Length: 336
Image (spheres, rainbow, N blue to C red):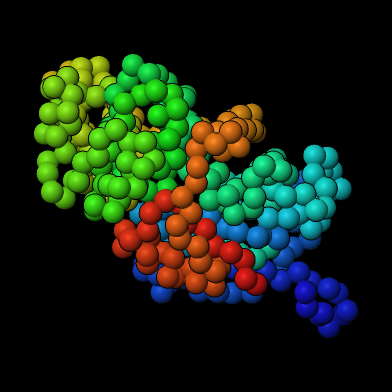
């Protein structure tokens, strides 16, 4: 709070802003005076903020945003005030959200319909770490491609935040899971989380290895959050009528795919989905978040929060993420 000249008390939020795209040094901390709540809004003081690879895309300009802009897409915290028309929440409730740009801040106003209550079985750190990644896994394996126990799956970057959750979720379904990683440490982590076979992509051709592991039958589906470095070779891992799902671009944008190439390799399917299309309708948000919390509360998935930073250390968090030295989920604790 600050007191202005007329005696008015204003809520001030510490927030990250970028005025131009680029490296981590483009992120600047600024003070933002929060506007008065709209009738349908809620004021949330963050306890934890999640970090996801999409945040680096926004910062670098791979996914362009109007500038200047805030960063961050998910957070968890406590309701400190509500608008006159808010019905489902009250002051003191613990809440979280996803796909709401601007979470790298201490406190913010947000629409009631974008928030979900955190169940008593889940703490704030877990909520901030799991929701975006968990909802991504939910729509990938339960709605986009309905994986069952007869399927063999290739999942790239299986030791990352999304990958470790996906590995456990897929094993709970009963699927065979083949994953790719970049180091022996990450291989061990993937195996510990249920991955059946792990390929060190830096040491061997992953398509050749997949075909060896499947006796040249191929896999039913490839889930690829890497993009440029893996997408084309991933097509060689699929069985006829298989599906290539490119849901991220950590190595850069996926190259154009000629439909004729899909035909020649077995009438393959190719899709580029986003959580924005699968999780922003209120009914989809509630369904998906409930599934994630159910999986977490029943211990069918366990979180690997191996990197935790203070909110003020966001530059280091981004640097570590892009350097591929992190595993599992990453969160920042609000220290403002």
